[in-house]
Image (tube, rainbow, N blue to C red):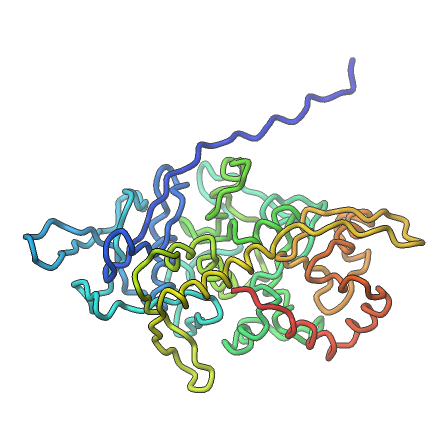
Length: 414
């Protein structure tokens, strides 16, 4: 009898889904794309997922709604008909307008402003949408037809895998300034493990390395569906295999994780270049009206930006997106028991979380020494700069004050 087992089956590849586009009613048709999302939910998009996404773009307007343009007499103003929530809770159809109740008719002379960068978005302390505030992060029985899974200690919150995992910040660790300005520390209990609340266990999930890299590229995030937290894919990957394996998968229980941080991560994903780029693309109208956060006045201010400024914002988003590319291998260090290799998260845009208050120790890797060495030596945001002594870098990181300064000096992702 052979000891060999069959090779693993190739993951199924789903066809590229159509895109459902949400339009801004105050700009001319053909130049008014607000956001486009892949119809990965049985030919549509989960209604609340896309609705809350658009409400975030409109500066947390939870009263916003979808509408269709109806035929109007020549020279008459367009008429928008509200789209009621479908019985199956799926938004279908190629195009929908996102309207506000205090602006029932298009106003091309004064479009309602849009938040286009995460750093200009403010967290809604007065209340999140009910679908987020009511979601169960530590479910028991999931209902008929839904597989229940437990998560081992330090196991991946998506796959329950206990190997090749690492800690991942929910609100990205490079967003410390946004975290502090938005008073997000109030959603994390004080911890003796860290002096920075962004490193609190409430802002940490355990994730397999390859999934962590995709998570920090904005490929997917977690959203409430049917009362439970599930993985939702917003950007396709070259293999087109991710959707068939992970889309709409219910997560393992997140006992310590803050739902407020999860909601902020959802907003960060929506405001990424991959989803928001078309709103700012070249060839659009002569201007856009966006919201900027004024730190002196502690309030939003509407700003009219022309095509040139649109390009500036767009190129900044593109630059931060393209900076998330795999890094080069680094030569083996003398005396190292493990060769230097690339890991699944060797990406300048990944969180690459290990010990968030200092250098990682081998004991903190749930994957063992070999994975710890690969992950530790990847050229990620946690790695010491090239050409510097690792000992010197570790000594520097061990100083809390120096570490904070290093974090603040790094580029904050939009």
